[in-house]
Length: 86
Image (cartoon, one colour):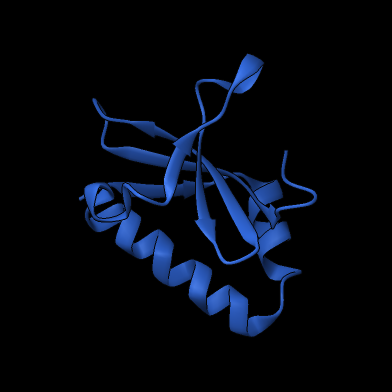
């Protein structure tokens, strides 16, 4: 199981989202921490200068994160609506 860490910006972005979507996003983050392979169809790598990050789709929201396999850490970088996330 991975340990999930949030950047302060990601925490603030998550708090600003509608509570119903907050719960859905938190559920997906929990699933991601337990078994990332379970969500492989929803995870895609970013391109360009952000190619070290991945994104997880949850409805119209995107969770931008970095997975560190050696330390078993998932660092949540951003949680934002798809129109604002890239």
